[in-house]
Amino acid sequence: MAKISSPWATGRSYSETIPLEEGLALLRSLTLNEGIGENFPAIVFRIDRSVRFPSMQHPLPSPIARRRTFAIISHPDAGKTTLTEKLLLMGGAIHLAGAVRARGEGRRTRSDWMKIERQRGISVTTSVMTFEYGGYTFNLLDTPGHEDFSEDTYRTLTAVDSAVMVIDAAKGIENQTRKLFEVCRLRDVPILTFVNKMDREGRDPFALMDEISDQLALDTTPLTWPVGSGSDFRGCHDLLDDRMTLVEKGTNVPLTPLERAQLEEEIALIGAACPAFDPASYREGHLTPVLFGSALRNFGVRDVLETLARFAPAPRAQPAEARLVDPMEERVTGFVFKVQANMDPNHRDRVAFIRLCSGRFRRGMTLTQVGTGKTISIYNPILFFAQNRELVEEAWPGDIIGVPNHGTLRVGDSLTEGERLCFTGIPNFAPEILRRVRTIDPMKAKHLKRALESLAEEGVTQVFRPLPGTDWIVGVVGALQLDVLADRLATEYGLDTVLETAPYETARWVTTDAAAEIKRFIEAQRSSLAEDGYGRLVFLARNAWEIGHVGEKWPLLRFQSTCERT
Image 1 (cartoon, helix red, strand yellow):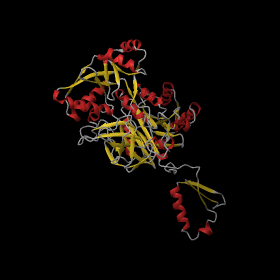
Image 2 (cartoon, helix red, strand yellow):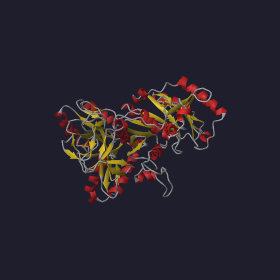
Image 3 (tube, rainbow, N blue to C red):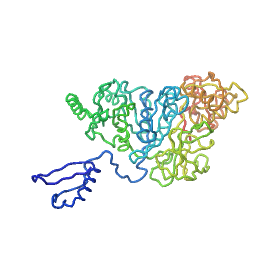
Image 4 (cartoon, helix red, strand yellow):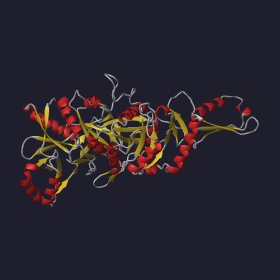
């Protein structure tokens, strides 16, 4: 902002604060006035740093500090994908936002690009999208909202520095929201809360914040506050900048005295009941700032972006087995948190999603795959916009780049410039549903093997090969994953398959420090054993009781429900 002042007229001081651009224009016009020295001898023009102009972006020390890598999490139908579309629209990544359930050939959402996603109106895989806004680079990861795909969501949250939690104003905290929050808590991911659908009848904002505080054990502080709801929703008051933004732009209809009085009363109550906003507490995961709006009406979306740019953490240090990896380190490091095949239906492509953790990545670099020791030259790194992509010449910590490959890279792989460094925190979870899978055409058995291995590397399913027998067994967390598996086998690989009930209920990875004990166990339990896609020994259990019984019988063995993908 600029401030001008002058003791003209009756000798009294005059002062006015105006936008910086207007101030500069005024200064130019005054300079061109030949009589300025005689008529206005004491005009003062200065930049007032104490007044914040919302559109001003302060210079940042490095490209790393301008990265914001975040995920959007919510219960299904809370408006997560709609918010994603509007954020992309705001960032200029698209020119027309789609609808989750567009009719006929209407405009569809960009982040839900799979056929099954468009048919059902849900997200079943994580989409990665990069865009710029206000001098910042945002890497947005749109996660699956359905609980059956929580494993994909968990892996995604290993690659982000913060998250936006979307809540339906009428429903509050829902089951999947609670589960995803617990995942964020395990990784100390800061959470910004966006209360969506304020243009529909909903619950009292104070009641919603109390619910967040009680059920999620988080301090809550609103940064904006709604005036009205449903058909009476007028807009939101920015509590940090003390300004009102109305829903309908251009109407300039001020709040009524009654609305103004109620707003002032509620603001006073917020000051008494809520803690002051502390950016450090937010970044540590103890406090969630709360914003209100309507993604469908594109209201409050700008507040989300500006809050992330202003307060969300830049790329954070990432945990590895030996140490924490600081993003300011010079040598490039990163890890694969997702593999996606067949994003382009015209090519049998395979892309590994890599979260860069340190160093300045440049196209053509050679990195070492830590697990195998192989070197990989990356000549075609890509940035993503859902299934669309473009080549990138350089990237920085916090960026998500794609590396086309033919099965060389798998989820959990660490990449460095030579250091033996393995990133941690990307596990497999024990499946809750097991099915035998076979092809209707037995001549396509080898094709099925390749397809299942490919989909298992993506994390769509887990694949187990029983030590006795030839039938494949697939394991999933939720039943909807089986529908996705069958659909992708048919549409992407041309395989008609049958999923049959397996005589097992769940699986456990078997580990021990006693090699001889493993040999004895294999001989005794061979009919209930299998190998996963990484060649690790897995015990297939018929029920929870059998897991406990076998565990007591073999005390030197560990039966693990999770296993690191390294």
